[in-house]
Amino acid sequence: MTSVLKRIQWGKVGLFLISLWLFVLAITLMKVGARDFAPLVKTTFSINNTANSLGFGWLLAYFVMSGSPVAATALTFFDAGAIGQADAFAMITGSRLGASLIVLLIGVVYMLRGRDRSTSLGMGLLSLMVTGSTYLIAFFMGLSILGAGWLDHVQVQTGPVLSSVVDVLLTPIVDALAPWLPGWGFFLVGLVIIIISFNLFDRCLPTMAIKGSQVGRLSRLVYRPWVMFLLGALVTSISMSVSVSLSILVPLSNRGFVRRENVIPYIMGANITTFVDTLIAAVLLQNPPAFTIVLVEMLSIAIVSALVLLFFFSSFQNALLSLEH
Amino acid sequence: MKILIPIDGTQASVPVIMQGGFVARAFGVRPTLLAVASAENHRRDGEMWLAAAAKRLAEIKVEAEAKTRLGRWDAELPAEIKEGAYDLLVLGRVKQLNWLERLFGNTATRMLASMPTAVMFAKGVSADFDRLLLCESLRVEGALVKDLKSRFPLFFRGGRELTILHVMSQIGAQPGVKSWELRASADELIDAGTLEGQLMSEEMGALTERSRAQVRPRVRHGPVVEEILAEAEEGGYDLIVIGAHQATGWQRFLLENLAIRIIVTSRKPVLVLPRIL
Image 1 (cartoon, rainbow over the protein chains, first blue to last red):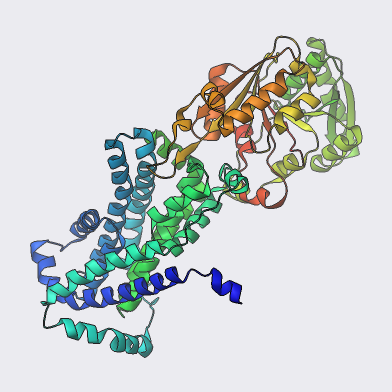
Image 2: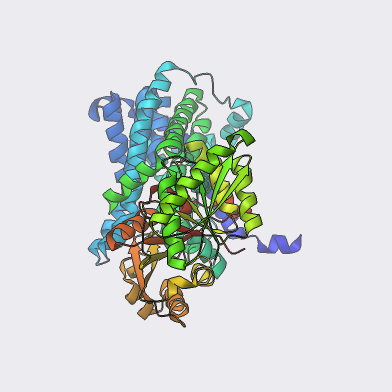
């Protein structure tokens, strides 16, 4: 027992708890401030239809360099009544499309710093194309599911326990800030805190210093698409970030290489469970329809990915790799 | 060396008969033609197929033995292979797998995975075997080359040209990853002593040892199956040599069956060597 306790990285555990607390605090602040943002959202930003919501989510993801805070923002706007269900869904989809470009943008920076073009841009391009192609199809499927109301009954009722925890831990903070911040200020502070919480969370992921010929050899193999799909989904259900899940592949392969055939289904799986944090945000908002929106998002992308893997994977892979090449 | 050529009297058997005949002629052996009749009253059909096949082989100056068995193909063929201790089985086309078969396999893929003998798929017919393409995955170092040399030493005689192909389908997992190897030629990898370079260098040594065959290394960059097929077409090879899909343990379920994909889509004959267990 003592040896187990000694091996635990307590620093990272502490960091995880702090990031979790900050995440919950951020959602609470954003929820409080979102109401004051509602007029701004509808009039100044013109987020009053699905297409604008998609575009807003896309652009906002570039601004904050991440999709997850934007997805949380979409839910808080929905909770505040600033946008409707379909618009929130579109904004979340837009956030993923925007986030998928970030890996490519990082590659462009490397390229501008003199690194080889194909190396710098390859993974980013592949990630963007996989995400773009599957999400755009899933978008229309998800809108249909939402419009038909098939999953409206699938909601999570949070109950009094969560309300009590929020009241005890977070309401005093909100009350303390009230004299210092305007309503919309809560939202902006919450947005900054949620970005910080994700950064902290990324740091508390276990660093995988796996070296050794055995793992290196495993990374040279070509796995079945569904195996990599499940692996991508599993890894991202923990990391909650597609770019972090991709970076985890680096130490696993000694030289930082991954086979193209493996990475495409890996990204497809990652694109589903990357919404785990958004799902948690929906629960924390204590807004059951918000949970349905995220669930529909995950389900529609899962259905599209499964159909591609089962029936069209070869053609899909060849098309993407030709474009990437 | 013993070669088995199963036939069923259909047009699809013709390339199988001819390819098997050309291999037998190259090795200077008498192949065995096998017909499987479902029942005694169909035995005569089997004998007719065998007579027609023997006539075709006679046209290319190959004499064959003929055998008829009664029963089902999926039972009689493995039984004949086991009883006859054949070195090579010649088969025809394998149909494209549907999605269910890609997940769970089918009779053909399971038979192929557990086949104790080498199998040649008559995809197109090559009369000569002057240029061979050995597709080495470098997974089990040197296994393909050693196995080919021990089973078919004839391929290493005379002025044959053997190309060891390794396909690097890797991509850098992150923008900052150093990846000159992902664009390098075989010679550059060998000179730099990289993992792939060292393995290819060892294989070339094993191939040229006591052999008059010309051996050259080749590396291509792209998806594995597509690059192998492209190289086979562009290089004008007579035969593609690959290892069978791993049939046991976790690898059978987790690893992609690249062998069957190559067999299904290739337009050149494919020789599949069983995995060394």
